[in-house]
Amino acid sequence: MAGTKNHDYHILPPDIAPLATTIGALTFTTGMVLFMHKMPGGAFVPWLGLAILLASMFMWFSKIVGEAHAGDHTPVVQLHQRYGMILFIASEVMFFVGWFWAFFDFSLFPSTIAEVVGGQWPPKAIEAVMDPFALPLLNTLILLCSGTTVTWAHHSLIHGDRDGLKKGLWATILLGLLFSTIQAYEYIHAPFPFGQNTYGSAFYMATGFHGFHVIVGTIMLIVCLKRAYNGDFTPRQHFGFEAAAWYWHFVDVVWLFLFVAVYVWGGWGYPTH
Image (cartoon, rainbow, N blue to C red; front, side):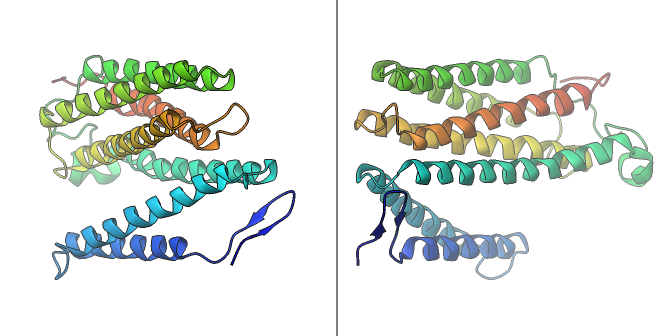
């Protein structure tokens, strides 16, 4: 059955992709609960859910690209896509609010959990913290540069410069990979482990989830680069790239807050590693 069309929007027929994505997400989260509680199925259920998620996402996004090529993304549809991306980023902001809340709750009121942190912040069990003006500062500069290069790519696309679009995307992707590599090196040589106390838990959950978002954003930009080489995107219609650029800028802003609050302020005056 074909979708129903008018001059403003395109109503799609029922499709399996949204249902498959829901099933994949439920299977993955259930599997993670089984894994963390060391229950039967914890070794393979998360991987099954992840496989379903990735397959359904590929299928769903491929169809969205096909709709764009078919001319179904009218100005009204594109406007609603932007609303959806804005709401998604807003939900991601609230996700990070939770980790910042935990970090500030521990750091501003250490006396309320004196038995855990010893009445001080960072806790007495922490012998040294990350030096914020070493690798974290380098990663900050890398992400700021990547925000510039993705803006360069967007500006080039709007002005019909496809060569500049590709170069800007290449530069942003390489900077994102460099950021992830440096963060992995930093974690390997960190002076404190995850889960030993509230400082380590709050630090790794906040910075680690940000690192995960950098990886997701890098994958999004790689897909955009592939589509750019395929001849996709026009100055008037390029929401897929625009959404990835918005997401990347969001990742940049979150890192700036992490750098100032967690790395600089959170360990101010403490011995550094």
